[in-house]
Each structure stands twice: as structure tokens, then as C-alpha cells.
Amino acid sequence: MAGLALAGASGQALAQSAPRALVINISLEPDGLDPTSAAAASIGEVVHYNVLEGLTRIEESGATSPLLAQAWEMSADGKTYTFHLQPGVRFHDGAAFDAAAVLFTFERAKAPDSRNKARKALFDNMASVTAPDPLTVVLQLHRADGNTLFRLGESTAVILHPASAAQAARHPVGTGPYRLEHWDKGSSITLTKHEAYRRAAQVRVEKAVFRFVNGPDDQVGMVQSGEVDVLFNFATQNVGRLEVYKHYQVLIGASSGKGMLALNHRRKPLGDVRVRRAISHAIDRESFIRAVLDGRGKAIGSHFSPTDAGYVHLAGMYPYDPSRSRALMKEAGVQTPLKMTLTLPPTPYARAGGPVLAASLAKVGIVLKQEQVEWPQWLAGAFKGQFDMTLINHVEPLDYQIYTDPAYYFGYDSQPFRDLVERHAASVNARERQILFVEIQRYLAMDAVNAWIFAPQVSTVVRKGLKGVWMNYPIFAHDIAAMRWE
Image (cartoon, one colour):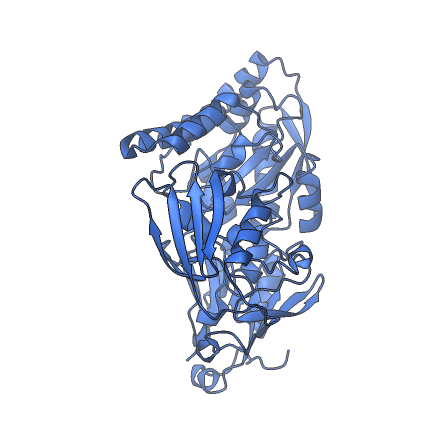
């Protein structure tokens, strides 16, 4: 590919002839480019901060800073936020960005037919969104929520162009430093620098190409041939193979991911908590992490990551115990062998982890047929409930509200859990909120809603001389404008 240095070139030569086109490989191709109306985290990997921007920005540290909002105030009771917007900002087509665009975006996300995955976590809590003037937005919340500024920095809260929002999934028009140049379906997405961007002089990378190679050997081949600059979240078992290439460096960081065996509660007998607990007891988490992740991960027991503030370690609630697992299956009246399907997306952890899980569950009488699917098929099938079990990594931080929605792909329906989450959201007492936060984690674990297995580390290969690439990922985003060649 034109403009790329060969792997054998010297580091000095790379710095002197720095390619203006940056190639980033992510494992999964997004099914669209509107992160406000679809679930795939890979959408945000491509467009967040690059094409589309939000009011706030989440830094690598997890801290929140201004973006489209230059400043804000919060009321004493935590229920009112007043945002002062950046003046002079324009969308890629030249239209002015103002408070009307924010109101349009948030009202769209709040609508009854909204498919925004942060609707329950963020937008349902907005009692009103008003604009006293073109550069001021006032959010009135039903209840105080200390995560509001963070939520507004996620890809689900990016601001869309009101005139083209309906086409955003195919051609997003934003306020960011890059605009969509071309989408070669099944191969790559190309972004080009927006020359009229408000801080265009600070943007050093002229063009970026996102590729979607997910095979572990193919990913190694990209580094070996020098055809990639950033290989994001590659198969961890390849760390040793990739560390030998002296013109690249391997970054190992933390993320908010939760790797789990997700269970479809609509499929019998998975609606029985005894069966779900049996499945959790059948999995040796530490062995899975060693075999599949080369030891680069931590065992977890609920839908929370060790990077989350207030995290409680609950992996010990279901120690590896095949005998206990078989006893629970018998208690539930399940005839074995129980035959079910394990759907595996095309991620390295899923393809490597499928056989490990199948072998573990076979020991307790659950026979899994492994079904390998591509990412579009996984999205289409899972969100229509067309699966029994699937091995998946949820990367969004603090996304436990998904368990309050019976229509979500797990099909989990628990009014007591919804009440618990509501109590936590309504509380203004810090001590009580922390206690309830612990209860939320324990409730999900006690109900064995899914079989949580690992919190993964994030492994990224970066060509030496390229600066500004994150090591830790509180959210999955790649801020190309912050990258530069030295």
C-alpha cells in the first residue's frame, strides 16, 4: 500500500519519511457508522473523536474534559447541567453547530423508538433539554447522576447533523477533524483530514485507513510485512511473536471489558437459575485465561471490570466445581447430554475460547455445537435472540443498565433488579450509592445472569515513531488527531 514504510526500514528513516496515511487494524468491521443507533463498539472505534464529537471527551486516564462544550456548571443538587458550547464550530458541510443540534440529537436518543444503547443509562434520565441561546444547553435530570459527564463523552452521545442524521449510519456528517472518504465494505474505511476543522493546524495525520483483519496469523502477517501502523487489540497469545519486530512496540494496557459466556434466557433450560449456576461452576476461569489469553486477564464474577470504581471481586462465588455443576443440573431436572449451540464471533478470544468452553461444559453433560459466524451475522442473530450461548466481550464501561431491559439480547427479566438499579440511581447519599452499587454487582452474580469469565488486557502493536496511541482504553476509541510521527 502506498505511503507505508517497510518493516525493515530504520527507525530514523521512518521518522524522516513519516507516512501521512496511517493504517489502523481493528478486528471487527462495524455494521454502520452511527454509534447513537447501533450496538457495535467498533463503530465508535472508527468515528468517535474522528468524525463525530460529543460535548465532553474521555481521556485515556478516564478523566472527562471539554470537547464541543467549552465549559459547564452543575447545580448544587446535581440535577441541572448548563453547558457553554464552543463558538465557531461547523459541521463538515459548513453548517453551524449550535444548541439546536444538541437538542435534536438528545431528543432523538430519548424518543420511544430510539435504538441508542445508552438510552436507559443516560437519556431516560433527561427530564428536559433546553437552549436559552444558540451556544447554551441546559440539561435537567430526573435524578442526580455522577456519571453524567462521562456518559456524555461516550460515542452514544456524539452530536449528529440534524439534516443528515437519518443517513449517518452510512455517511456521518460531524464536527470532527476527519470526514468519511470511502468505505470499501469487507475491507477498509478511509478517513481524510477535514481542512476546515477548527484546529486543523494541530492535526498531523492527513489520512487514516481502518482495516478489519481478525485472524491471529493474518494479524502477525500485517506486522511482518510492515503494512500496518497500529494493530489494536490483537490476539494476546501473539504477544511473544510480535515483540520480536524491532520497528514496532507492544503496548499492554487495561480496559473496561467484561468477557463472558452470554446466555439466552428465552431458551430452555437457561431460564432456570440452577442451570445458569451450573454453567458458572463448570468453567475454570483461571485455566481459560491461561489457555486463551496467555494469562493476560483477570477472572471476574459479575458484569463489572476491575477498572470500575467500586468494583467488587466476585469470581469466587462460583469456583470451578464440576461435581457441584452436575448436582445443580440434576436438581433442575435437566436430562443430559443437553445439546446447545455456542455462537462464536470472529474475534481471536472467541475462536480460541470456544473449544475451551466446549470441553469444560462437556464434563458436566452440556454438549456444545460450535457455530462460527462473521460479525454482521452475530449482530443480526444475537439481537433477534437467535442463539443459545455466545462468547463475547462487552467493552462499554459501567453498562450494567442493559440488564434492566428484558428486550436486550440476553432476555433477562427481573423486576427486583430493575428496582435495585432505580434505587441506586435515585439516591443522593454517597455512602448509600456505594452500598447499592455493591448490591447491583452481587445481584447479577447471585442470579448467574451470564457466566462472566475474564477482564481482558488490551494488547496493541504500534510502529515506533508514532506517538499519541493509547495504552489503556476506558472506552474503545482511536483519536487520530492526537497522533503524530516523530
